[in-house]
Length: 99
Image (cartoon, rainbow, N blue to C red; front, side):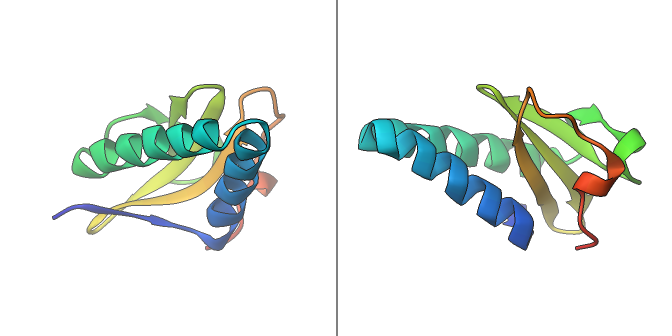
């Protein structure tokens, strides 16, 4: 079974985003988190899907959930989520830790 894993940085990103939604409405936080994990499961099943983002590092790809861009790298058993960032953020190769 294909799986998805979070880098420590992506885990912190996701905590911040979920906390932000939950501060407005607990249901909104749960809804976002469920949508996000559903998309991660689907992407893990097809790890070459998503937009190639080689400008940020070898093998990096992305997909969008609401206004958030999820950057990931295919790995042997699925995907490794590297970052989850608001689409308005300026992203550079330095945005990605060596994880």
